[in-house]
Every structure is written in structure tokens, then in C-alpha cells.
Amino acid sequence: MIQLLQLLLCTIPLVVGEVLPLQLDLDNSQITIRRSASRDDKLQVFHSIWGAIRSDFATDTDKVKGLYSQLGGYIRDDVQCSSGSTGRSACELQQEVRRHLRTLMAQRLANLLNAEESIQTYGMYIAASVEPALVRDILVHAIEDVYFHRPLEKLVQQLEQLYADRDEVSFRTMIEAQLALFWRYQAMQDSSEAYLFNVAHMVSKIRSHHMYASVDADLQKRVEALSQRLPPVLDLLFDPQGFCLLSRSDREYIYTTITDEWNYGLNGRQMFSWREKNFTDTAGLTRAFVQEQHSTPLFTLRSELFKWYYFVDPSQGNRLAALRSGSPSSSTSTWTIAYAGDALIFRQRELTLCAAEKFDDDRRLVKMLPGQMHTPPSEACQWLPIACAPPK
Ligand SMILES: *[C@@H]1O[C@H](CO)[C@@H](O)[C@H](O)[C@H]1NC(C)=O
Image (tube, rainbow, N blue to C red):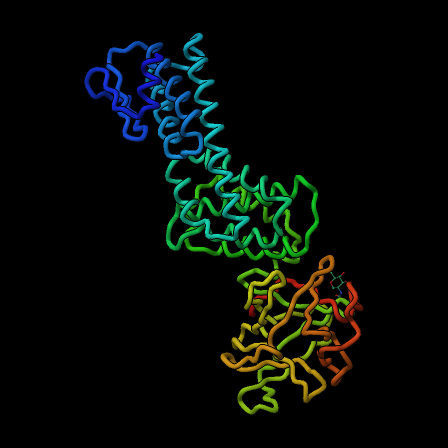
């Protein structure tokens, strides 16, 4: 055995008998073992290789990975964990190698996250190298490693990079990573609005992705469980079906007029809140789109019936109106969105979207008002997202 180790460390090819299944490439060292070698002899060799790797190649992921998979085959074909001392020893060794491999991969991933470098290639390498359970284990450990060190809302976006376009394996890896981060967040009982916001957005992207249907049922179940823990108000905000908005003060919904052209000829339509309480229909159907994904994302809001965008007209007392699609200017058509309880709050700079004075018996103006920067603002400036009544 000492001779074997010396050979390994000197990286001289070592061949015992003919080339057989048990084979490791240690920096040009070929180790082969006779097919007839006993289980105990093979285990001895594995121990020796592990010793050599630990002393000279401890950070060489490929070598550790090679040994890990060879050990897996040996345990599958030759011994069982419960089959006496050889089996137990083999499985202890496998677990030790696994632990080391997990550490190497998790550390590398954590380092990339900290350096804000791309994790996509390494993520794919991990997923291609080890079994799904170990991939999960590695993700959990990498996230644990950086959890207190990185802004959580930013981590959501970094983990999203694990997904490589049109690659299903990387899609699943990305989902596993988001789940690992979320359950860590839950376990810590942390509270971060910015993080929840980004997760809700991420979950809506995952669920509406065309590959989601082919993801295995167990993973889908775990995504749905996460989604149930999100504030319902965020679930609605990111709902691809859209939502209606009721003012908390009067329970009047915001809608885009069907006939009232405005100011801009064919390019603008008036918007109001309708004074019949709790009434909604498709004229109020709205979708929120993330425009720029900063730590505080910027949104556009689109009236879905005509696909026109909400905008604010400063020349009309900052009234809300709808503008034909394709032309929203960023200063008057992008919002930051906060939430308080079950209500959404829409802001542009120092102004907040509020139900304002009556326009006539049926309608009320909706305006951007100053002086509502506290959270929550007055009830006229809190909007409850709800499902719109379907078309009749
Ligand atoms: C509007 O809906 C809320 C919640 O369902 C309900 O409590 C309230 O009574 C309704 N108001 C009217 C006028 O229908």
C-alpha cells in the first residue's frame, strides 16, 4: 500500500492487471484493479486514493468527483452499507468524499455569487456532475454560505442566471436554488419587502414559463407551496391574467373609458374610478410589467382591454389616463410599487396614485397626489388588487 501511495503521489502510471472497470485518472496516474480483486482489496485502494487526493489534490473538484462516482458504482455493485464492516466502511468513505465534494462545489458557487460573476456555467457543471439530491444539497450549502453576506433581493436575480436559455436541467436547478433561498429566509423568520417582491416576480416567471409544465410533480408542488407563503397581494400583482384595482376608501375600481378620447386625439383615453362599489369588468383589467429590475423595480401598468399604458398628465393636474401602446415616456408611465397588507401603492417620485374628487355622479378622478409618502398612505391611495369580473 505504501508503494501504491508513492506511485500515486509521484503521478506515475500504475497498472495492476488488465484495464478493468475500477479506474481513476489522477493526473496521468492510471489505477486499475483486477476484476478478481476482493471487495476488501478494492476498498483499500479507494482509501488510498482518497488519502492521496486529500494530501495532494484536496481542491481538485474533478478528482474528488471521479472518486465519488467510482465509489458509487462500487457500493452499488459490490457492497451494501448494511453488509458488515466492509460495507459500513465503504459507505462512510463515500459520505466523507461526498461531504468534501459538496464543500468544494458550494464554496465555488458562493465565491462566484460574492464576486457577482456569472454562475451559469458552473451551475451546469454541477448539475451534469452529480445526482439531483446532491445538487440540491450543494445549492442549500452555497446559499447558507452567502445568506448573511448578500442582499437577498439581489440573490434572487443572481440565482436566476442559473437558467440557461432552453435548457431544462438548468431551469430545474434554478428553481431548486430559488426554493433553497426562500426556505432559508423562512427559517430565519426574516422580513424583507424587497426580497418578497422579487421572489413573487420570479415565481410568476417560473410558473408561466413554457418548461414549467414538464418539470416533475414534486418540484411543482414545492413551487406551489412557496407561492402560498407569499403575500397574496404580490401573487395578484404578478398574475399574468391581470387584476382589477379597488380603492380601499370607496371600493371603486379603476377603469379605462371605452369611448372617451382625450387631449391626445386617438392616442389617449380617460381613466376614472367607477362609483358603484365592488363593481369590476374587463375595462379595469390591468397588468403590471417590470421595466427595470433594480433592487426597487420600475413597472409599467397596462390596461389589457386595449393594451394601452397608464400614464400621468402633468398638464391636467396629474390625472391618470391611458396612452396608446408603444409610446409611454419613462417619467410619466413608470411606477414603483409598494404594498401594505393587502393593498398596493403606486408612486412616481414624490407623488402617489389616489382616488380624488368626483367627476360626475358615476365617476371619480384618479390622480397622483403629493404628501402621501408615509406607509401606508391614506385609504384613498391604497389599491386592492382583485380578480376582475369576466366579460359577460
Ligand atoms: C364590497 O366587498 C366587500 C368585500 O367582499 C364587502 O365587505 C362589502 O360589503 C362590499 N360592499 C358593497 C357595497 O357591496
